[in-house]
Structures are given as structure tokens and as C-alpha cells.
Image (tube, rainbow, N blue to C red; front, top):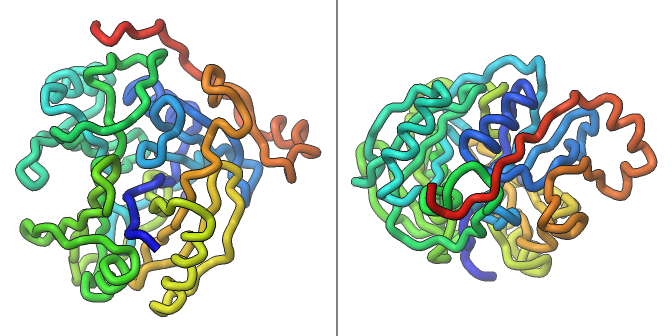
Length: 320
Ligand code: ZN
């Protein structure tokens, strides 16, 4: 069993589907790589936003529930999600977000300049500058030029009651390395040298518990190389005293779920088979995809889903 390579995907809850789609696809330039339904509730969409092909470590997913009440930030959740941007792109993103009427605050994250803002449902997002080269697949039909495109996840920040209860799992089982601390935030690093490497853990023993709702992260998934290793992780997590789900087929990856001791829902997901398993790269995300076990109900499922329009853009030359 190798150490965890990094973040695989992050799944959150949104309100209105079109507003969510427009923000991630058009404002942030994250390609809608899969339009499907919540496999546990097929009356709801499941959107996947990522780079051109859905490279693990770039994948942000949403269950949009139109009438969902907003959540409130607190302990026992992923409180913020950060994408990496090149250091020279801060001005571009400050202007782009301002044009989209997004209120932006500038801050530093462990010495790296960062832009802090919220998505339309109040989810905390950050763009953190990072020098490292990251192997994303640039979406050349998106609205953002290549030199400014988001470089996948930089990090996610967990807000929890007790780091002492998380650390044996994070370090001992998942193989994260404790890197450095700043104030109440401790940064951990995964094993690869690529996308989604960092977890920032913010310990606030006296903070209230998060209220789940629109704008809340539902779970964070970590990368495992294949099905065999996933089973080893399953056993190790169980041995560490966490209740863990059976392996579930999520069509684009296989998943196990467990709650870390502070209540944050973790998933370990395989890189394969990926998002090209049921449609070609050219048309990724444009048609409603259903897993085989829902195909016979396609007409009824499609009729219940809200209508959406997927914005399209002129091809990018890389400079604009
Ligand atoms: Zn997931």
C-alpha cells in the first residue's frame, strides 16, 4: 500500500443547478466533464467540473438541490477548497472575479499570495499561487487562457475539534506527512509531487459544529492507484477503528467511504476508469449520462431534472 497520492475529488452541495454550472464552467473555467445524476438520488444532478479530461486532483463535483437551505461553516467539515494558480495570474483572477461581481479578499496562505472568495452558494474558495508545474490537461475550448487556467486543487482546509484524533489516521494510515504550522493551521502533504497535495487542518476545539446545506462540502476523496490497493486501504481504515463502507461502483471510479474521528466524511477513490469511459473527450459533459442500472428509467429521470444550458466558448489560442 503506497501513501495517498493526493486529493482525487471534492463533492459539495449547491442550490440552483444553472447558477452552479455557470459559475464553475464559465467564471472559473472548469470544464463540465460529466453531467449525470446522484447515484443515491437520481432525481438530482451530479455535475463534475475539472480540467479537459477530469484528471484526478482537478475534480470538483456538486449535487445541486434547488431548494436547499444554505449551510453554515463550523467544525467537522472541509471548510475551504483551494485551487492553484500561477503567481503571475493573481491580477487576471482579481479582475475576472470582479467582472463576475464576486467579492474577493487578498490573503496569504503559508507565504503564498491567495485570493479568497465564495461561490454563489457561499462555499469558501481560494486561489493560491504556486510555482510548481502541475500536469493538468488544459481545456482549450474554455473561457480562460492557458497561462491563467486553474492548475487543479492546491489544498483543502479541514476545520475540526481535535487534530490529535485525526493525526493517527492521516499520518499512520493514509501516509500524509506533517509539514509545517502557522497559527492554528497545520499543513500536511501527500506523497506525489503533483496536484492536490496539501491538507490544511485547522483545530478549533471550541467552535460550533458545521451546519450542512448548500455551500457545504459533502466529502473529500483521496487517490488510490487501483482496486487492489483500495482494499488494502479499506482494511487499514477498519483496523484503525473507523467504520468503512463496502466498495461502491461510481462508474468513473470505485469508492469507499468512512468518517474520520471528527466527523469529516472521507472517501478513497481509484483513478480508473475515469471520465472517458462512456463518452469521447470532444463531447465530454454535454449529454446526460446514466449508469447502466438507471438506463431503463432514462425518460422518467430526464423529465424530472431541471433544464440547463451549458455555455460554450471560442477556442483559446493560449494568449488573450
Ligand atoms: Zn466522492
